[in-house]
Length: 456
Image (cartoon, rainbow, N blue to C red):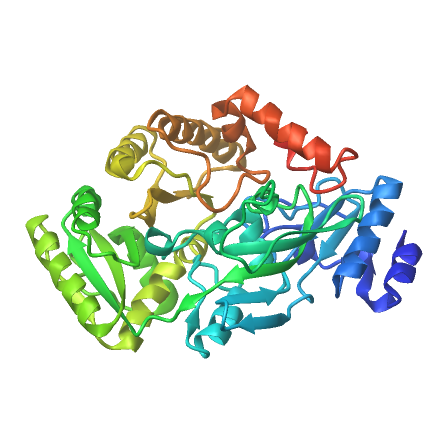
């Protein structure tokens, strides 16, 4: 296999044999799920991806596509061995078309680099997940959301077209720079959120928007998490069009403070709502003042605008590092389930109930404006056996309650390996059958990411 892959690529240095593969390529960002592979291949272009996939298809070799490896649910762990197909060196911004407000990029482009590039041109790419070192291809594969989804939407809303290599090595392009498209099935939508199971994304046509004139962040402390979350409905109803509405418990802020060295205002608060507004200066000021009145009527302890961009960036730095901050003090299981926005407060109340009943510490934060609840379930001093048993029991309860309230397994991390039991337990069998039929149609030999077994 190794010699054949080196012949396909014409560069022996970009094919690594199994025994020489670095550990980081055999896991995800948490590093707890680990596997092995026969080869690690670094592709540079669509042609190389196509030839590798054709070889894998003809020989029945499993392939695990990979970008930056920042996922949290084991999607990039090569449980079936075979080939790891790394796309991180396909990292070129091929075009920014200011006249059509689109960009064409390769999948290995890092999100923060792309955002900085287009913002320097007076444009913006709004999807804004907490992990800025993820790749655009990875964001598309999980339909990443992030902080600004409440106003702008998620990754899916900014993908105009995709080039993808199918399991047999054939190449298709679905979509274009056009705003509208009623020309047949929108096949690109199948690949968005598919976690690398249907094809390998090799080119992305992305929608851009004009960069807002100004941005203002506001921190609103509350005496309880429940009152903070309950204020969100009033904030949205006020029609002030916030860009982001985040909720954070004080306990997790303290971890973020220690991790970053940044200090939050109002340390006596039990929870915070963190808001951002963007647009032209008068509009942003008027919207922020409207929400000040709403927050005060909902019992906010204070209302703190950050007019200094550096201070705002520091506050958001704490929000962006929370999973890593928790991981620094204890092993934990990250959860990113989603519930209807009117059920967020009720769900968090249930989380606290489970916490009290089980003694399992759970730290909550997330995107209050779209119901995406992030939980860090803390291991603490539990033995391996206790942690495995108790975690599974708690997770079953948490996911079942989310579905009872009309929610779903994942808002943006994906199902991967880690969340399969809970996805299976709460998803209609007929829906699973249709998903498997799509997988079979595009990959009947099941060479692409088939370790994501809900599609088997």
